[in-house]
Length: 193
Image (cartoon, rainbow, N blue to C red; front, top):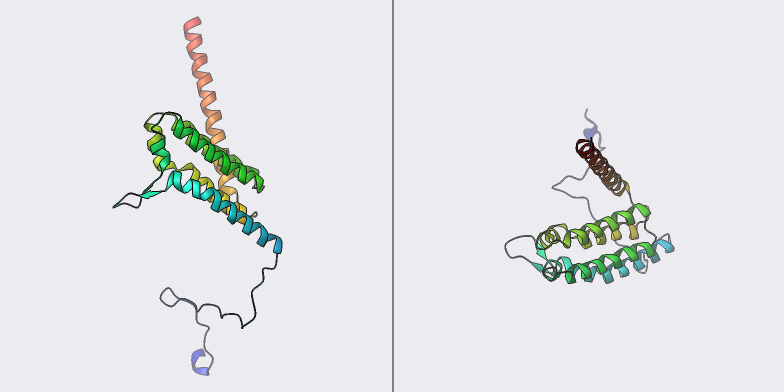
């Protein structure tokens, strides 16, 4: 006799074609309460701040959808065609996002990553035309908004990706400086000696 023939049925598992049923609605007059009111206040404040800075980032990075593609274009690459003006506007926006992150006491490694995103966006943006193309693809402000959202709403969010990126960039920078010094030393020893 099979287990299913004994009147007992194996528990059903959700499948991709039959998702699990949604949870039952609370009884009338019963509301869900968040167990940690401090977490709820922090989340509300974080979302309000994200809306403020998110609007400006949206205008700079994602204002218009390019027809026939999934790509979006903001004012940042367009304003960036005016030397230094677009980079100054983008730099101020990036600074505002990083300051909001610091105000919410995001992990220091995440703030370092946000500063690196802002520096790449600003530094490469200074190069005429090439910087505008990079602005179109890199979208440093949107990246920083995503980091802000993840870590402001949930302070315990994983920071492994930020640590790996920062350590990798430091290693590459040290490698480039070391290689430059070795090449300079070889050049000087050839010329001088």
